[in-house]
Length: 161
Image 1 (spheres, rainbow, N blue to C red):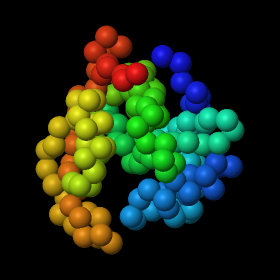
Image 2: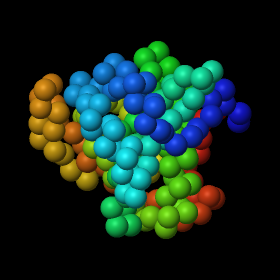
Image 3: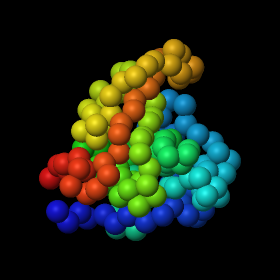
C-alpha cells in the first residue's frame, strides 16, 4: 500500500514540529531540551518522522537497551489519527529492530489509551505489569507492555489498509 507520507530520520530542525505533537497529544509532554538530547543520542536512540506535503504528521522515538527495543514516544498531529501513520512508523521500527538483531520490545502506555493499546496488541504486545501513578500530572497508571520481536519479515504483524 502506498502512503501519502514518507519516513525519514528526525533531525534537530524538526524539534518545533515534534514539540507541537508533544504538547497537543500528551498530558505530560517532553520539553524541547529532552527532545534535543534524544535526537542527539544516535547511538542508543532512533527518532523517525512521517512527512506529508512538507509537514511532519507523526513521529516515533525508540531506545535500544541490550537486545531490547523500548518505545519512548509515538504520536501524530491532531486529527490525523487512524490514517495508519503510527502503523507505518512501527513497521519501520520493526524492520530496523530485525536488522539490529533485537529480540523483544517494551513500552508504557496510559491505561485509558484504548486506541494505542489496540495498536500495540496488533504487534504482539501484552501487559506484564502496571506502573502506579506513572503519569503524575493526570494521576493515571501505565500498563507495561512487552512483545517478542519477529525474527523475519514473514513473522511481522499485519498492516491495515
